[in-house]
Amino acid sequence: MKPGDTPRGIVFTNDSFLTLYEKWAIADDGLLRYSYHYQRPDGWFMRYDIEDEERAGHPRYHLQASVLAENVRLPTGEVRCEEILKVIAEQFVQ
Image (cartoon, rainbow, N blue to C red):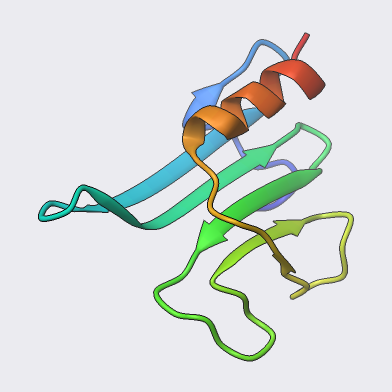
C-alpha cells in the first residue's frame, strides 16, 4: 500500500485504516500466517507479518514500518489482531 491509497478494510474516524489477513490450521486451531497493516492518511504505516518460515534477514515474525529503511524487518513475537486494535485505539485514533 502507498501514501494516498483509498482507505479500505477497517476504516477509522480519522481516515486511517487497518487491513488484515489470517490463515488458520483447522486441525489444531493454530494461526499459520497473518498480515496486519495499519496506515494513516499521511502514508505512515506499520505492518506485522508472519511468514511460513524464517530466512536470512527475514524473521518469521516481524514488523515493517514506514519510518524504517525499505526492506527492514524487525523481529517480533507472535501478535494477535486484538493487540493491534488496542495499539491503534490507544496510540493513533482518538
